Length: 296
Image (cartoon, rainbow, N blue to C red; front, top):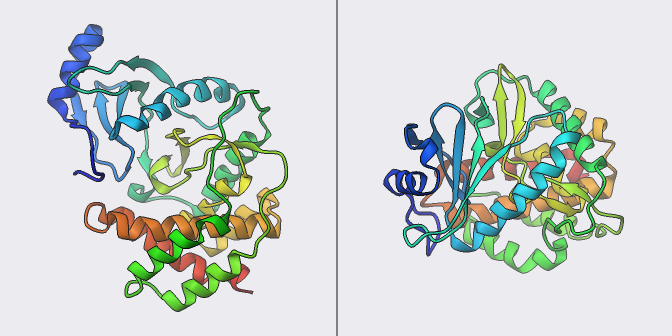
C-alpha cells in the first residue's frame, strides 16, 4: 500500500536483487514481506534470523544511519531488547536509498498480542523509559521530538476541522486549548525514543519483549516518552505508569498534548490508506479527552 507521495518502489523482487548483489551470503534465505501499519519503513523477514527495513522515502534514509549509531550506544544500558543492526545496504539505481538488516526479534506487536497484562506492561514500559532517560548523553547526540505545543497550534486546528464529524470536536478543542497553556520543557534533555506507539512494542508470552524502531530517537523533552500513557495504556495501568515514573503535572500535560496532536494529524492523512493506524489514533483521542487527570 502506498502511503506517501513520492514513495520508492519496494517489493520482494527488488529486495531479492539487493540481497543478491550486496549480501550474496544471504541469497539462499527466504524473503517475505511483513504486514505492518508502520508508515516509515517497509519490512521483510530474511530467513529465520533477520529482518530488512527499507525507508519508503529517500529522505528517510537518514534515520537508518542515525539509528545504527544510537542503537550501538544505548544497547549496553538497557535490559529490554532493542534492534541489533547486522548490515547496512547501499543505494542502487533500482532502490536509491540506504537500507539495513537487523537481527530478528521474536514477538507480536502490541495490537496483535492477545494476552497482555496491562499493569505488567506499564511496569515494563516504565522500567525501559527510566533506564533510557538515565543514560549519559553523547556530545553530538541528535535532537528529537517536536516543536513546543503552541507552535503546533495551527496545524492541529486544521486537522481538527478536517475530521470534526469523526470526533467529539468541541471536547477536543476544549482539551487542546487547555493543554496549550502548559509551560515548555526548560530542563536538560534526555535520551528519548520519541515514537512509543503500539507498532513499536513487541510482546512475547504476554510480556514486553522488545522496543523497536529508533528512527525518531535522540535527545529532548522526556514528555515524548510518556505518550504511551494514552496510545497504549488505559486508565488503571496509566495511573500506575505515571506513579512509577513520578511524572510531574506539566510533563504529563505536555505528553498528552503531543499525543493528541499526533493522533489528530494521523486521521486525515491516513484515512484512506492505513485504517488500523487511524483506528488507533481515534482510540488515543478518546482516551485523552476522557482522562480526568487532564480535564480537571
